[in-house]
Amino acid sequence: MARRTKAEAAATREALLDAAEAAFLERGVARTSLEQIAREAGVTRGAVYWHFKNKADLFRAMLLRVRMPFEELVEEIGDPGLAERPLEAIRQACHRGFARLEQPRYRRVHAILIHHCETFAEIDPLAMQNEIAQEACGALIEYFTAAARMGHLRHDLSPEVAARLLQATLGGLFHDWLRNHEHFSLVERGTQLVDTQLRLLAQAPESP
Amino acid sequence: MARRTKAEAAATREALLDAAEAAFLERGVARTSLEQIAREAGVTRGAVYWHFKNKADLFRAMLLRVRMPFEELVEEIGDPGLAERPLEAIRQACHRGFARLEQPRYRRVHAILIHHCETFAEIDPLAMQNEIAQEACGALIEYFTAAARMGHLRHDLSPEVAARLLQATLGGLFHDWLRNHEHFSLVERGTQLVDTQLRLLAQAPESP
DNA sequence: CAACAAACATACATCAATGAATGTAAAAAG
DNA sequence: CTTTTTACATTCATTGATGTATGTTTGTTG
Image 1 (cartoon, chains in turn brown, orange, cyan, blue):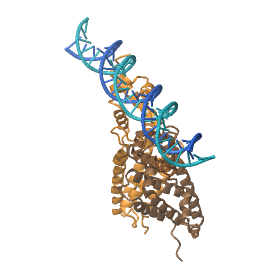
Image 2 (cartoon, rainbow over the protein chains, first blue to last red; image 1 turned 180 degrees about the vertical axis):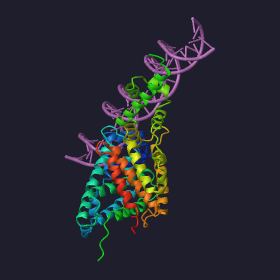
Image 3 (cartoon, protein in one colour; image 1 turned 90 degrees about the horizontal axis):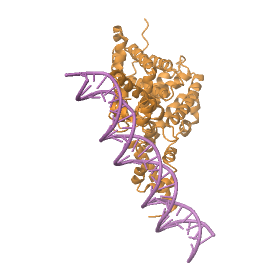
Image 4 (cartoon, helix red, strand yellow; image 1 turned 135 degrees about the vertical axis):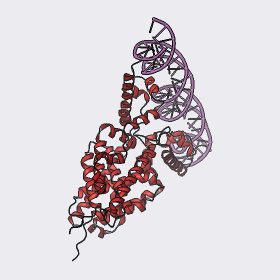
């Protein structure tokens, strides 16, 4: 075989990324060779080195297909009245995030990032995880601060502690689920835990 | 150099394990060769293959130095009156666990297991993490069930949900801290979060 | 004190993976 | 229709790590 049309080339690129996803998840990043990936995609290593500089470059490209900042999740809800109910905004954003993560591609890539790759080349997965965590925690603190200002947060809790508590809970849940997603549904248990946690953190509205 | 006395041999074995710890933590398990470990321990690969079958065997030996089942933490408190206050037992066990994990060796090994090693040879770190998580969750459910029976748990919460919530929080906290332990003290923040969480989960004792 | 075996060091064979170099057929540009 | 790229396949050289085999020295045992 030889040269393909542009569309076909883009298709093999995607096939390579798909194959990398599957292989990385199954055998781990370190133990999968570029040749295994190429074979699983139906091409040779030549194609890999044509589309990507090396394994790290391929890895980065794989990650780019699933980025999901916290703020976007809130914006996607599109309910402007939600600004007055920050805790509800958090709740719905979490639900959105759960649903996203249950899509196979999102799940696989995050599982790879968190559980199936070590530092290699110039790739530092822990730094990436830190970035994500920092971003999420920052957003949570903002929302909880707003909630506190409106009196929706229990008065004996600081927004920071509430944010850290929820973030830890979310992080632990993610890790557990990504380790073995067949054991339970993220949407189900996630909803259960987040709703419970937010209920515990919320100040009961005063009854007249 | 050649044969050493038994004590000296045991010392080099420990030196190898120490070197492996440091190297695994710094470069990751996959990217550290047995020669690097040997050199850092002041010996050659011959010593490694004398004391251990291969890298997996060395890895297992490293893990064996830091096992810490949840039940032991409770038993170590040694307060028999604690059977009547399960939530307090959980709290103190967590505090004990935090203090343990802040010891450098415990921290390093767990950081390696969770963040710096992929599946390799016959080693499956995710299965190990699952074992630990299952054990901890099972113990937590028992204690929360006891707490519910005594009316110490909020009546609108099931012991299972409470256990999962706390376990997720603990897990998330561990992961965060192991990623960058210099950012905060586990004992400090852990105490803060666990105390808060248990306070939220607890049923306020009825006042006459 | 002799012989053995422990505790390594050294040397070697092997293999898998990488990256670069080169080949090539077809698509696209002119 | 010719030329130039593109999109790969194929080959090759190099490297790094592993496992094993063998050598060597010194505690230790009888």
